[in-house]
Length: 483
Ligand code: TXE
Image (cartoon, rainbow, N blue to C red; front, side, top):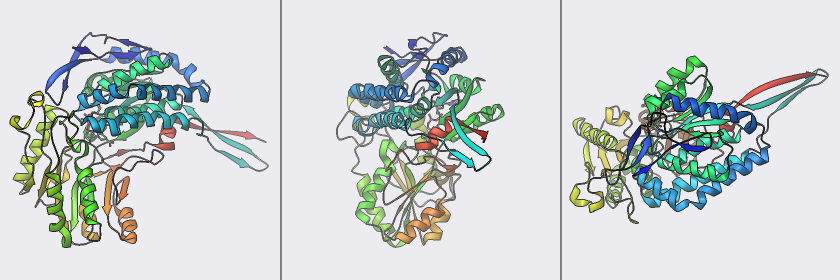
């Protein structure tokens, strides 16, 4: 049984409690490793290490900081196969997806912010005859980074890289459901010679060790990605402590398909946008609204394509959907399919988990759900309002733009949206009116790391990406000198 350990003060250490949690492989339903069940004592050790390292790291010359982050990126790349296999095993996603997206993106995250260090400048404001103001953007100190299980290393590194780039020291916690690649990252940091205490990774339960990070007086900013309800709890803890908060939360993203779209290309891409990573990406489009005049044509082509998707062993090259991340989450997804039926929905395909007979011997006890398409639901029913975060989408016809926007904007979330139309004016108009932080036109999940990333309403507060993240992890200070 493999045992994961915390990474505190530059070395791999047992949790103070010496207690461990069982870590299950979703594709097989079997325990395959042990993860530290850390608590506030481990957070205190991590904080002390980060605090001691801060003066040295924040004063490290920019080029040295850049090189160190580049070494970490190279270290991940050198262990690509190991990281890819670990991510797929821990999360249940297809191996080919971890290889194509997750791990390469983690490498890019470190390289992007390594280079940003040398270009991140600030402003000065001259007052002729009076004096000059200049803005310092100083590292905050010890910051907390907490990430979810759907894109484990991708989102973990998306926070850690800018935090380190700006000279902060970090206490980070990955999801207890997918801890493994964060553990491998610890080894890469040790090999890269990252000074001890600069990055500390503490594993364990959100309500215990995650909460301890958020509550810690000395941890001055929290960057969190996860569920909206958890985001609420974190905000309630951190707000009275006047901590800086970046909250990337849930979504219930609309896909708007207008009659003038390129139908075949749209069908193909919307299938990907609906079911990539088993639908466990907060940017997935889970509510598909189709203009009435092409509704049936789109629906039939969409369902036919969904039926060709292969669900099964993440290790198989032809697998499109792997395992759902946990038995608990699989049951949550299935409960929403049941709810959809009760709310009057018609299941057009999928609608259940995979029977053991349809799975190979290795995966017969794994957590698999068929990609499910549902029509005939009112846009205000619970199935269309609540986040499912699995391979389940709804199809709803609309008359016109106004009708589409009313339904699209009817949810508490506002993370992303995709609009399929060849009418340029309509694309601009709808993009402006849709309540979301990220809008794709005739595309999905095209990512430029310089762009602001995040949502509105219950999808979060603040933005990650580019200078947004560098500014989040620094405190601006205006200094005026009289001439
Ligand atoms: O979230 P959880 P999950 C959302 C997605 C879905 C959810 C799935 O929409 O709703 O996240 O991830 C820790 N104090 N997004 O189930 O439970 C927990 O241990 C401190 C949106 O993991 O919120 C884990 O490490 N920490 C996103 C992390 O929080 C706590 C992209 C997330 O756990 C805690 C990905 C507490 N009280 C998923 N309770 C986006 N917008 O980009 C839990 N945690």
